[in-house]
Length: 434
Image (cartoon, rainbow, N blue to C red; front, top):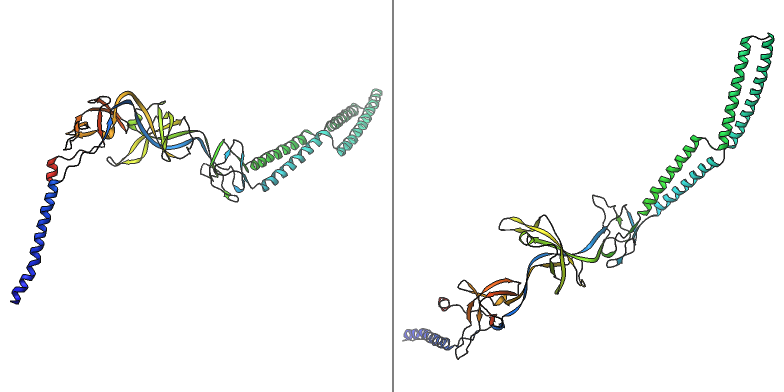
């Protein structure tokens, strides 16, 4: 008896659980059979007339009319910085100073040398040398006495020669001595006349050369000193500052150099971006553009295309289908309207208007569906009874879209109601397969 009681105790819960499960399944089936199909959900909208714009899009950034990086022509230590980020500057305004003490001393020494050599040259021009004049005057007096003595000797020799007391040779010698004395006297006269005019030509040329060399050294020193003061090359706004007082900088060369500041002339702002080759073929200079900036999503900025590159560039994005880089054409758009809020470097998209269609039938792009490989829209049910009716699909022929609306060429009339945000239920065969 005990084993029999034990067997009954084990199987009874199993039979009870099986019965409960059957009841639940039957109840579920009954509930499913009695559940009503909910009415279709959609929003009614009317077909309307309006205009739509066909456009192509370029991605890029906002850039200023001009932007320059400020570098120094000489190296050194930063002494003073007169501007900061966000400051407005004017062309020619002093913005940075470098240490200039040693260069100022060089200029002072060069100026002193120029003054000294200029004075020396002027002295040579204005006054003959006193000692030279005394010597020259003595030489002249001596030459005059010799010339006079030679003349008297020659006269006496001529008289004696006529009387037969002197030979021809002695007369000729007296004549030669007289001529030499005359030449020496003439030379002494010329020399003292030159001294009275001023310095000798060679001395003047030497003094002039020294003065010119000193002036050249002064000019070099002044130019080096002037490079200690950096001025704004354009009017604009300081957008970056990369140095502090005391920093050592290197001069700007073709190999590089220290970039100290960046100034942007934001009087005119531009959009610069890239078009793919298909869109570039349709774009033209002068086409209007709408610019959207990521940082200002609720605003649009107007502009005009002013440049499309005549040659392609290799894009930065890889085409993974062909393993090649996309071919792009740089495009530039001048922003012509209100620029408030725009800053240099902002990311933006430019929608370039290719064509504008006016007075055409439009429906929301999301209302267009596909059924049996046909494009169309759903019309709201005409009657509502106890059983929810389904919207009716009608095929249409469409044109271009702008991302929100699409042109309807055939199949609908202005003012006709259609369903928006409607998702048709899958066919019954599909539900059975599930």
